[in-house]
Amino acid sequence: MIDNPPKPRPPMAQSAKRLQTHALRKDTGLNALAVMSWQPKQADTVWTRSELAALYEHLHNGNDTTHFVMGFRDKDGCKKYVRSKKLPVHRAISWACSSIASLPKSRLAFVPYSTNDRQQSRWGGMDFDAHQEGQADRARELAFAAFRVLLNVPDVAVILESSGSGGWHVWAISPDFHPTGEWVRLLKSVVATIGTVIVSGVCEIFPPDSLTSRFGKGMRAPGCWNPGTDTCSQIVWENCRTSLESVLSGKFKTAPLNSNELETDFPDTKKETSFSVSLYREGELLNKLGISATGTRNGKLADLVGEVFYQVGRNMARRLASAQFQTKTAATKATESEHLESFENLWAGLHDKWMAALSAPERDIFLRLETDNERDAFRILRSYARKAELDGAADFPIVRDNFAERLGITGKGAAWIRDKLARLGAIEKTVEYIPNKSSARFKWLQAISFND
Image (cartoon, rainbow, N blue to C red; front, top):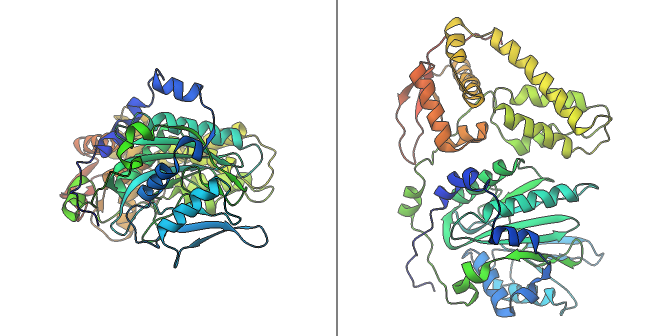
């Protein structure tokens, strides 16, 4: 039983907001050493057996004894992952630790869930895949970039490991529980900082943005045996001994956060989501508009640009176009640079058409905007207003952090732009924000043309 009261939590939400400032500073001291002097090691040479078991138990997130996933090879030698039904977690962890040392004939990988039934987690993870030829360098560069960013987050341990077949995992582990949404926000800030997108085959985050179950998705525990490659992940760098000393020693215990703490931790949590012509989800878009057949690149790119023009900022859209090319499964004559040049032309054409449809008052406000982010925000909020008009609604919600994700900036920056548009007369608040219940709502003050 857990008897101790919860410890004060580090300000992770504040860390996410500071990432883009801190992550860009030059690597010195510890950061430079971590990148320049790495030597991959097997987990059982990095930690003792008891330390490794304590770490895995910590990653289990306080879930019930059989709430985890096991990885193994079937009789045909194919990898297989299944949810535990009867095997208790302490036995699975022991089996997984033995598998790293190649002791049992039948080996097992321990895969902890990235959240618990109270939507809390002690860890966040990033998976950079290299399933296709030529993607190993990209996966490595992204993993090292994410690793350097997370080193600047206070009060978390960081683990960088190669996961096999050119893939990489990056872990951020806290001694304490944090709301799942806090981890998602932190990791999405990292994704934006290193200039990639969240999509299968490129980068996945744990906990995921859209939970597939009560417990999210799982990631193979650090250093675990990989059923797909029949090798063990190699630890490249870790600082668990300094950041998780009490955890590795087995002396650390903490209780889950209570509901009141969860409610006050994120003042921007809303029950509804900002909306546009269609809800922006980068992974879904790339799966739907992937280049999977020869001769379809131009058409798929045009479809992507047409779908996201009213939903995200130009820089975010360009990253989506780049990811569309990087995840293609069919050969193309065009290079990635040519693909992105086509993107710029398509975007410019849509923008010219959109500008021509603005009313005179709208154009006057738009021309007074000073940055690309402000102009992107104007276009996105105008699409909110258009959808509200089509739905017969008098106003529309703006969820600050969802709005920020579409622009690729911080929540504070998105709020500042939103407020500036209100000062200029583009929007007016109609309903105040109610914490943990509903977002603020706005109406568009200028006439909207539906011919764009």
